[in-house]
Length: 102
Picture 1 (cartoon, one colour):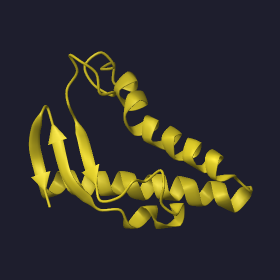
Picture 2 (cartoon, rainbow, N blue to C red):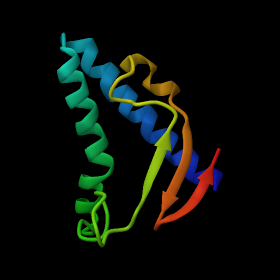
Picture 3 (spheres, one colour):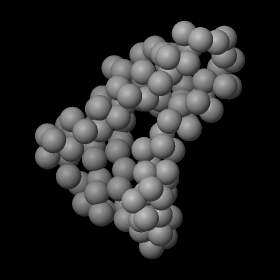
Picture 4 (tube, rainbow, N blue to C red):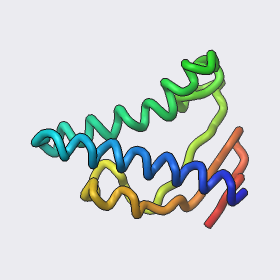
């Protein structure tokens, strides 16, 4: 179960680095930053499922799809994006079952 949390943290770190890299090259409004974080998350969820030909089974939270998601300790769309890397995973749910709980 710890492995799953580490994988998710790696994704958080990568999303944080995407943000940090983008900020280094241009001035973005808060609205654009939120859009950028949403795009980074889509890459790990919806687009990842599409890339593995599993978009009809997972990638978005919909009826009939696997219920795979994480519960975080803060709303990553409202925090200072430089603090994104400090976000903690409180719970991981895969296939409707809790696989990790802090």
